[in-house]
Length: 461
Figure (cartoon, rainbow, N blue to C red):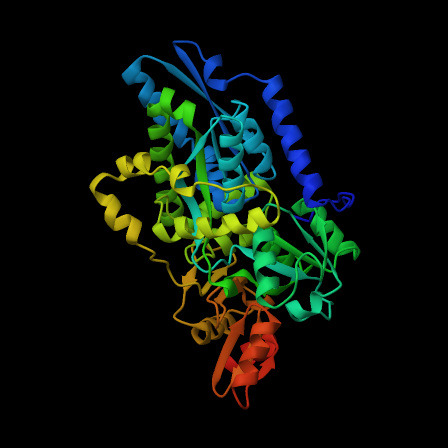
């Protein structure tokens, strides 16, 4: 699916962004009433805000909707309490409009990334419409859900090369947090040393193609999509930060108090959608691809059996700790004030959903092998114990490989094998998501050198 052709947006400063958000939130509040109030005694409408193309939220959005599990759970609930339920799905490009609708009482349950979740918490408290984080959709413990990319022909090879350059990002998003943190770690001032263009993902993708942006920092699935299309290459892997990123589910506190059975039904449905994705990863990727227009190979990069994201609804302490660290980044950008993360996180519903299994589930971070090959016409993938075995298999099935995925040698981030940078180090063939990590490896290992993917396949035969 090619990136949409959208005119480039004008750069927006932090103050302008904050003013726009506040205006949108307040005007929406003035214009709209409560979704819960609109339901009569016998019929309840549940409005769910989701982001179809932010594919690490699919177990609370796109996939959940296509499977019909929430409607199933609410039908069962209706038989118990004598009410009828209708689910109203609303699709958005980012988390900000979901937050605006939630504090206005027009969206009851929403899913979004970690940075937007914090803004959700802050706006809810500010406007006396508190929200609560009740579960997680997909996470990556090293931060690899966000990536900075450049055009394939770009001579930029590291973050240091971004000084004085135009970099597109969505201010207030998790991917912008990755950009800010990565630049600071590299000794680059994200406010003074680059020209940041505050753009929506589709606009930023267009800006990268037109040349008005030298680099693009975005969340899933944009980096993988552009790389798969041959329109971008990875410059910086968010996994290098080694700081968790995740997407989660938030609910209006008032709605949860009035309709706790609906919240329980939602989490039961989310659990089933998660199990479906884990047991049928290829079918799930194809369903999400059909619903979103994204290539199945891109969806599987992130959501597959060994994908970049791990899907698990439990509220893991490491993720909550990371969320607390995110607050300072948003505050420095003047996008929010203090956020009481402990008050925002409410695990009572997910604990009840898991029952006695919760203590074990919340500790688990199990994740299958990232090295996989998907052959054309196959309804399942093949997993491999390392890149050497994958290369041998791919070389032996030349012309029939639909997609091959490998884990970065340094960060473990999964990337397309044919878009990775390969290094020959003695007898070993090692993949890297970016040129920077590959060059760091060759600098430390005498005799190691970069080779093309074609050369790596030939050497593996």
